[in-house]
Image (cartoon, rainbow, N blue to C red; front, side, top):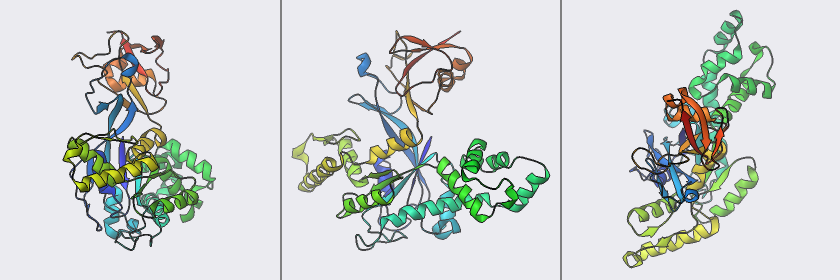
Length: 397
């Protein structure tokens, strides 16, 4: 699973990326600070199973804080997109192609309204962030359309001559965008496109591109810089203007400050929480004290910086994933003595046999049954697993 960070230049993508990964990336307030995409590891937040079994887990990957498990996910931060990126403006085509592999997108929007359409600084509040929400959808839709239209007439005639299935052919042609045959069929039926695909015009193809983009690149909008003057009012306006979109108030810089303070041993903070505690107040400068006081006000008002919320929404709401812990009824440790060492993020509707194969091919091939470790009850191979299940796999070998 890969999460893509998108948005116009200087919207705060690199700050958001660094806040989630603590990677060393260049952060500056001018367009195209990021040229090549940055890749790193962020973490989604899951209530750990350790408390229910009265144990302390030892994660092999990620970490656990106060009974909260942080499970790694892959992030890519592509360079800023500007209007007409699909036409090549601002190296847009290269940047769009970096998103091919993404399963879900986080659109970072500067809700302070202090950047123009190209990411240049302007007077705060003079730019409408609603325009940024609209433009990115347009760019992504036209990017899909450009791929769909490549040799469209020749492609359509060939399908007609060979008596092939347009649905199947499009599923194959757009496979690089994670489109499959079922998605194409559902989109064509929903849009009620002409049965004769030779009659599909540019408008039909754009509608199809939009529908397939929404299916393959679901998006949550991180309304960044919510800490700036006037941003809260603009966020409220956006919520009314886009009632069907997922918009989250966010302060990437606040989250980054908190993560760096944790790293330096100054505070105790669990990402996504609504508070933190200072550990070494005597070591804080006056500037740091003022900064932490300001962040506390943000947390009181919005209940979090929004960064962790956005990641969890992307994975668990938009993608509908679930977290599963491998374990044993009589033994929660692995061969090295690590307790509940793993937590896997898997697609919804994952079955017991799917989970077995995910852990190891041999477990799937030799599967006999699974056991719900909490309830100590057996599960058949086709039993759908639930979020936070702890599962033991029994095999014939």
